[in-house]
Image (cartoon, rainbow, N blue to C red; front, side, top):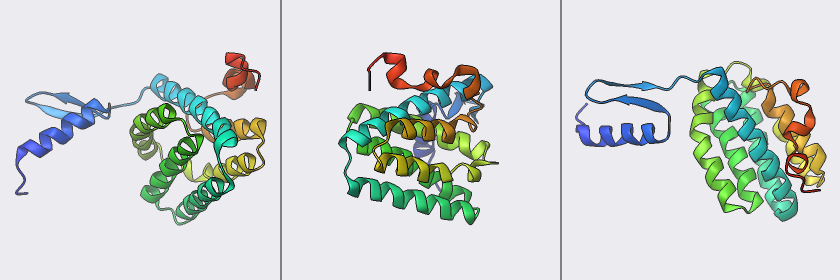
Length: 186
């Protein structure tokens, strides 16, 4: 292909650092395989992060921020209707990162960004059924625009729990409620 090995090695090292591939020096690289436990753990973190992002967005976001988030949600819906997997995954990622951005919390944005690559890879692997969950973006935006923390949290849980195989009934809603878990009284 006319490319030197150095940029390819550097790209593989970066992917390994991000946890997306396993490197076997002087042999090969392999895309990571997610165990059910890995998927569950990633899902629990995504739910907690998005609940926190939603709550902070309600406190710190403007209507203009929420309209931007709504526009991303609409684009994601269109990509789902067109069965454009790559665009849908990209827009889903953009939606969740923008939610973190609106929160105004730089640490949350950094963590969301770091998890994002794994989430995109997992979505590409487990794409079937993702198109049915993007309409929850609209519900999340509506709850945030209404400044309804409880409804925003429930919408996040509804959006993410099935994809990550998390049984909400088993854990009860309070398991995922940030205020309940950390007794913040929000």
